[in-house]
Amino acid sequence: MSVITGSDIDLFRMSVLEKALRLELLGMKSRGRSAYSIIKSEFGLKGNKQSVYDQFVAYRKSITSVSLADSIGYDPELEH
Image 1 (tube, one colour):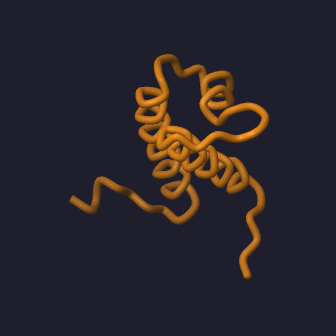
Image 2 (cartoon, one colour):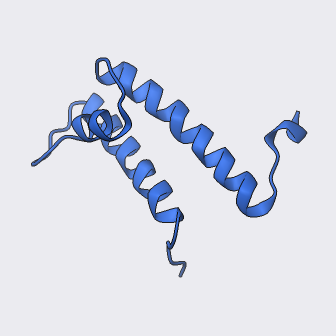
């Protein structure tokens, strides 16, 4: 069993928000604040649900690659 700690908590939360927004795009509703409104307010994104989703996915991927590069010395440029 692995434990999510430190800066990984923020990355995990971003991943959960991304998945929740994807479900909202498919029509699922939830109680409380929507992932759409949370993402817009916390990350300053603008637009409709689809454009916010696209922007957020790109942002999360860039953050994840930077975090991965910092933690294990991964360089995405070396893959190509």
